[in-house]
Length: 224
Image 1 (cartoon, rainbow, N blue to C red):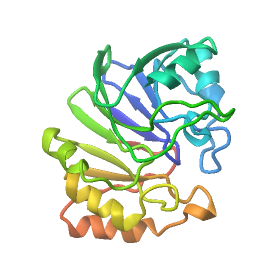
Image 2: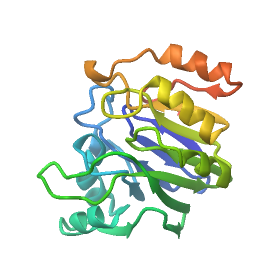
Image 3: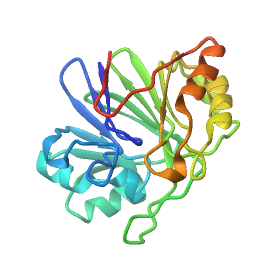
């Protein structure tokens, strides 16, 4: 499995079998990403919620690739109305797809489409691909049930927002890391605009002080 970062909260996951899964593909209006929506491939797109910096270029990418969009049911219905193939789910529910399993988790945030339609609750995403579990927290504040997520799932990669103002800031994100206890932490949703500018290096040092590995991915970088 490979994980590629496109800046902000956008990722491309490639399974060992070559299936490509995009998460929150905000590319064209993303000042941190030089990747164009017309250049990426996707078999599936997973959305944490409907805000423009997460829904992003989903419609264009999904139509061009004939991709299936996996999202909270209300958002999936909205996108189905735009002619997309969708699979609707709800918080706490899981489903097996050809690439692996998806489960939506709680996230403390709002969700409406850029044109003002209610899009159900915001969510985090647990994603199992090959032998790895990825927890993309989505946009969220800190909440105590993150500890349950960590207790019930062996999380390999935690993609955690640190930008503050709209999501957790670095201090709350450190507590979230303590709750979940993942193997590897990748900070997201920061430095895209001045309002969410934070010191990611300082966050990384605090993570390392917990005995955890923190990877600061630059847009376009890929692991492993």
